[in-house]
Length: 392
Ligand SMILES: Cc1cc2nc3c(=O)[nH]c(=O)nc-3n(C[C@H](O)[C@H](O)[C@H](O)COP(=O)(O)OP(=O)(O)OC[C@H]3O[C@@H](n4cnc5c(N)ncnc54)[C@H](O)[C@@H]3O)c2cc1C
Image (cartoon, protein in one colour):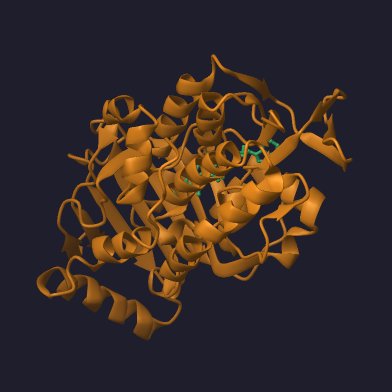
């Protein structure tokens, strides 16, 4: 086996999923994560089709099921909390649903004994030679690896260092998104959710963890903003500024945002690249092909991508040229289908009065039409674009 020493950047979903497979195939894995530990936060993500088969083969499905959730009824309300429309339980659910933070922790627990985790650090420079890649870290240490994988998300550091500026690949879909935990002060039951919308804005409140807590989400339409990806207080200020004049439960949610420790903010954007590898460096998950939260498929793509990338490296006995190229060929149709799912995102945060009214009418009638299962069927169809091969 060649190229046994592999460095992965990013310990959320894609990175640890890849580490699990690489460990199993006999590679030595180091995982560097900028945060001081596994990051909590995010709402429920779901799996369907091929991603379910991959999870089963990872032998962690029982552990994931311990944290399984099931999205409840979603009600669209006006500023007086009066119902405008509602969607039944499981309206958007896949076959298995779990909070993103819980999933990241399950992956971490399953890999921590066989993987070297370096928290609170980041890659500062990559220097490739014929034998591998010399990696300088922000902490000052320097190490040599055979291959480097960028699984460090939408604002991937590995992508910037290897392929060039983020602006070359990022396609902003016109919306920003924030999510954080709050107490379930509205006493919603059975993971129910509420959505309130005004022109160019939407706010959600969903109960979580057996209704003992909740997640607040904020969406607003905006051209691309210039802000610091690491400055959480600045990001909270952006949300406060955009929503300060809103009514419904927004003032209370903005107050709760101040004390939220798992606040997550980002643009709803896609990463579109013609190539996901260069030399000994390859991208995985959102770093290479983010489809945006609006696709509902980011986590599935990360899990399937990790399975294929590791499987191809195993099959090619570590030959990265063959493995990276085959990984890309197999993943491309799935990525194209998933990125298409985010089209029409403007209907989620309408920016004209007509579109806002129209979207409410659609929500009202949708559960009573033949298209009532489209929120499940569309991602399922995209998910089934791929039939991952067996690497057993
Ligand atoms: C805290 C959090 C909350 C999220 N909430 C939601 C949500 O509610 N809905 C949704 O659809 N998607 C959410 N996402 C995105 C979702 O996790 C991904 O779309 C999907 O799971 C693919 O995962 P990924 O591992 O490729 O990327 P990500 O989940 O984005 O993970 C990237 C990881 O890389 C780390 N990282 C970034 N830069 C560096 C660096 N320079 N060096 C080392 N590590 C670095 C990040 O801290 C993060 O842990 C969230 C992501 C995070 C990190």
